[in-house]
Length: 169
Length: 137
Image (cartoon, rainbow over all chains, first blue to last red; front, side, top):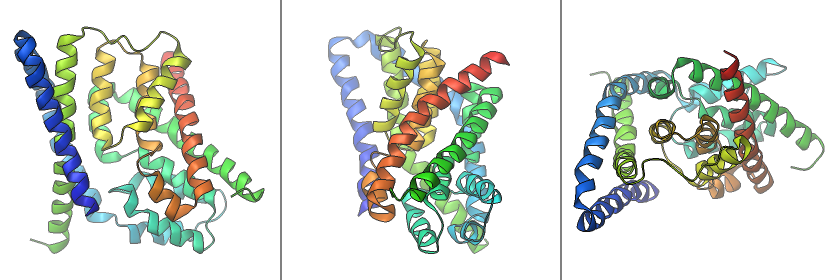
């Protein structure tokens, strides 16, 4: 049910944009062709990157599952756990709601909120999507952003540990 | 074909195809705004204000990060500041207003709300630090 609703939401959005084109075309027909040409130019630029992304996604889906990640996440301690939370968040694939049950289980097993926060923040860094980021922003930007985000995620995790330690969570 | 490979191919193809209608819509929308509005007006030249606007937009919009890269990349080409676009990209993936109800149920109300608020604030900090470091390189 949820999946169906989500799929339709994307199509509704596309339909809305198509209707917008028709409405604007009725008043200003001369902008439609340049707009479509510009969109086609974007598609041409991103199409090769899509193939790379697809290959990387297949590789990640083939070798990484929530069960495999969980094996490492639950057992970590000390400063190493931050590295594992960062790494786990980065390699986790699929929609976020797929991971909530695993994180809930880890909480029951005594994993702290700080660890969960760091894990969730690092889901922002997705190796299969990196080619697209490099195509648009360059590798320097991609590397700097990934390092800054990983660092901030640990800071956020430490803050959450302190908050939890203070009994606020 | 190996069952695991088949499953990985199916999952990846499904994930890609799910994001396609939104991505197509965004690309068409970018094409339209590019033609109708030569430059985007809605960002100022103030780094903090730009990043707040970027984070705000990124927080309410949801979907595959791929869409945010395409949108963000095109915004930069249109002259929107890198700070604003970076905070937009970071908030898109770290702040989840759409997923908030699910996060509340699974991980607790206080944690979910605090995590999203702090992620919003951090998206601004990340953007400013990233652009600052890039300026030094």
